[in-house]
Image (tube, rainbow, N blue to C red):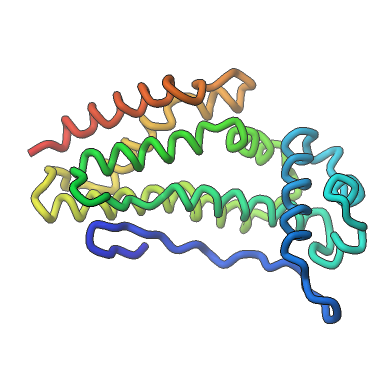
Length: 222
């Protein structure tokens, strides 16, 4: 984690690189097409029907093109997991705009994170993880560090800055961050894992975020 004034940033663990070979240069657009196709197939059909052949057909490329970048199915699945982590990381920066109060900055952070975490795509991703049996344990640990732990570290670091500046009263920032994020996620992730519908995107999530920020800020006010 890196603190730059009121801005809190995080660093991601090392990625699993795609396979590279000598010869023709890698076309980035084909790699994006492969990952887009693979993500859609994996999320909609599950790992049992997921294959390099199906990905190649959907991406409009040859199997050789896929194998040139990902030498086996599990390597491609790992790349999808890292890509999803990258998407999550983009929602983990608390960067107040000019003239914005700390409470407004916290609200924007929570709103941005909640709409991503509770999106259908991300909840499908979590369901997928529960059905995978061949994913390396180190990869799952890396994913936790790059998502849940990073969110905790980001928020905890920001709360510490606000505490030291005298803007809030929050001595145990790590515990406060954990409580805040737990309230933010609510039971939606549990509902999703039990195949129940989560909170609907839009106003329903907005109202939930408003309530969480209001309750927590009341606890932290000086």
